[in-house]
Length: 206
Image (cartoon, rainbow, N blue to C red; front, side, top):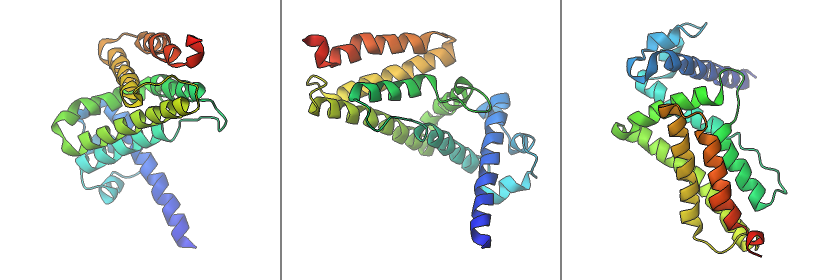
């Protein structure tokens, strides 16, 4: 009977540490972050961090996985959704949501992109970001291929189309976070609709 309870406690502790890491990163940034700073954001003893993680780097790698899991696990698409509706839902998720109880989508994206900026010098983190990118791109490609097969979308190179949409999403998020262009995500959404999705639908060419 004690093992399931211990597993739940471990999961709860991990989430507490992950959320404390987010708050500490938001305040101190990646470069200046110390394990002590994370400990100060928790009601638990800082020793809990050392028990679960082998130092700052191991903790931040787990934190990156945690952020990615949050976003990948929160895409909600109705089972009977048509390909266009599913594409809309996935694109909106990447650009505008989800929202959380504490801090906004963009608060979390700011931390995500700060870690992203350092990934060029970090093989492990670069691999995590690459895998995340490929899953996002792959999910979009799959929907485009389904739409082509269903006769909803015109024949296109689904791989290239999926990559284009994914890259527009990433570029607009970076514009908002790094350059302060608040309207960048909405502008990107409108451009994706006008120049990509509308032209993709066969009904637009009848």
